[in-house]
Length: 118
Image 1 (cartoon, rainbow, N blue to C red):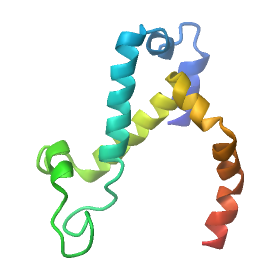
Image 2 (image 1 turned 180 degrees about the vertical axis):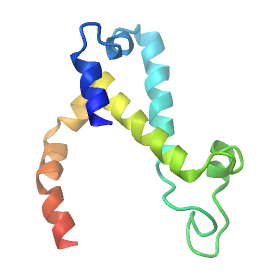
Image 3 (image 1 turned 120 degrees about the vertical axis):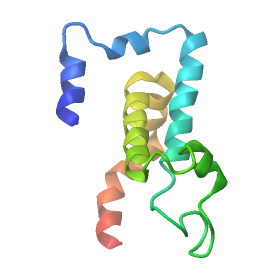
């Protein structure tokens, strides 16, 4: 996936520039849609019962609605949400500003240490 994205960024006619060059009236709803996909589909990490609050709860109503009542499998929704996060990070100036901020840079520098400690 990284090679594909790298190739998209290094082509003569970069396809992601079409998204970057959108008018702000189109870009705000598009970025909001990507952010909604990230938050709604990316927040569910397991299939079946107990995937909302605890092992005794049913699947969250919002995820049932977003996954078309279980028609879209969990792995597909997670894949789409991760691709939405990558596209948002590559095309949105605001997302790049947030990811480039000092707190996010600090978390990126210590994340592997936290992972090892965990």
